[in-house]
Image (cartoon, rainbow, N blue to C red):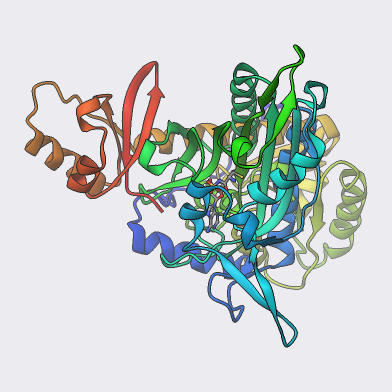
Length: 483
Ligand SMILES: Nc1ncnc2c1ncn2[C@@H]1O[C@H](COS(=O)(=O)NC(=O)[C@@H](N)CS)[C@@H](O)[C@H]1O
């Protein structure tokens, strides 16, 4: 910031969520969705809920960033039917085995029973790859890269949670690609990872990237790379996955093409998916006990202006406020709060809704051509000359807020990671040490060891092996309690 600023107030009591256990955190999470008017889960079907306008805007701005990233890496946006005939869904053995307990079926059209049951898509591989068969003939039809943002359906038997474990996944952004060689497909998986890493970075959400173990990869995939973030209660949330499908689906769907050399081969495929869990994570990772803290890029309201209407000064304060509002509304999403309630009530409302910046316009400050700015991420206040409140000043300030939020989130993330040195430790005490760390809201990294990388060990520790991950240049097995 150009001007010397005076830090007036810093939040004294600790309002971070990081000391909450799972129960307290899930209470906080459920409450905030309602009080900040993000989402209404009172819809009469379990696992289904309604995006309220404020929450819908966060969703819209967030997925616009993802859309831009996919468009700028030459993915074409498309739209496929929601219904998939059972004959198609069941074509790839592992795929249907992985989803058969989760599929919603449509069996009737009106009073007529359908001769073939129709699935509500749990994901769209089988719908899309059936059409790829019509489209992909020769190597010049490749690479083929598409995506769609749709609702998908999974009959989740574990308890459902709003935006986290849905039965109707309302914002399922899925990308599907096809390539002429294994190497090109590998490169595409890396590009998909670049898109997801950039997306999470723009939302200041820290992630651990793990290659899922064989027994927990996407049904029908060669391998799955997953993005896990860590919630305040120390449990991890899988917020994105990138799969290398190899030629499994291509062979099942007979996606043969003519190579440049005039031979026949099956295409090599990848797919990657992200859902509403991203919205849940913006709320969970950045929120504090005063409410939401929304990264400016996706904040429905970026600046709340609060005129302080002291007796006898209302006129001048409102006049200056409207003047400043008209100037700033051109380059920020801004709300002028002229409600006839106490300023303290207004401050609490905007802090609850996570508005990144608040401008307070007091009569004395205005006489000196100054205003007070409050930063929601640091809860600090400082004064700024009105003349300095330019577009670039605000853009720069919002950039600073975003990078400070990223640093703060990353510090909390690191605080949840415990690297265990397991030199010479016997299996029994290793299990105990891991359990103790997990109960202390930690994600545990142990140096990679084939002997421990199995479901038996997962059983012993009573938690999930997230997979193989690189952390600060070393390869580990990542272990956590998960959502
Ligand atoms: N029930 C659910 N509610 C909300 N999000 C979910 C649910 N199930 C999965 N997800 C999210 O959706 C992402 C993609 O789902 S997936 O099964 O891992 N991968 C696929 O479906 C692939 N076809 C890539 S599109 C997951 O990483 C997870 O973040």
